[in-house]
Image 1 (tube, rainbow, N blue to C red):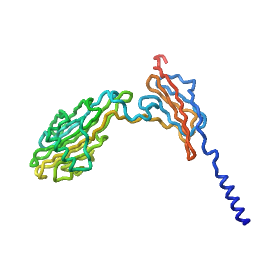
Image 2: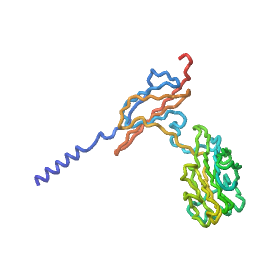
Image 3: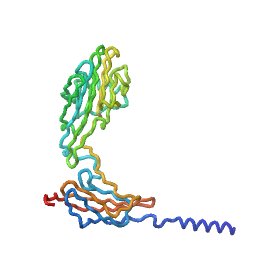
Length: 321
């Protein structure tokens, strides 16, 4: 019993020694501007930092780095100032006019999983004259020559769907190959101009030929490819009589609103691995900015956060300085 008592006492002491009463400290820090700063564009501004803080995020207040937009993932529709579809096309071999381009603001999308249902939907849509779709004035250039075309998309920002229809008409002749690059350029109020590549959208490739799986893709000749570096989309044709059927394939973007934005980001300027008592930042353009420092302490016991904001006016440098 004596030995057992000693062991229990020893265990109690060890447990007590492992209790980290000071393992967590509430964040408590301060940020001040160095008075020696001149606040001209292009000059480094020095922020002094002191106190108890493990991690700091810095939001400069510039476009795409504003603290107030850290949780913003879309803008009001009225803030979409412009939307332009910029396309590059190259056609080689075979007969011309085997590509059609459409855009819609009423299309409700495809399943992407039920091939026969998707085929039936597209067949009815096409045979019905593509109601709800506008055919874009795609101009085919000379064989093996790129053409560049812009299409205004401002009327489609609330619900945008794009469709490329690959439709050679004669399997006895070479079925034409197409290379397509496409980007949607957006101007959104309060953000820098942005660009979405066609591959940034959710795409459905659908082959209408009964000889093929509905979602046949990336299979070389006679398939639509997203894995070819020669273009964002490659519709890879075949020589005459190589197939017993004329190819009939589609690429659809699933419906999406064009007011989506990436949330504004802060820069990590401190973590637990580095000591920081000052931070320098350069504003390249004159203006008034709200700089924000977000300090955070966190571990298994708990977490706390402290935000420091300051308005900074950056002046244009006089010519004599």
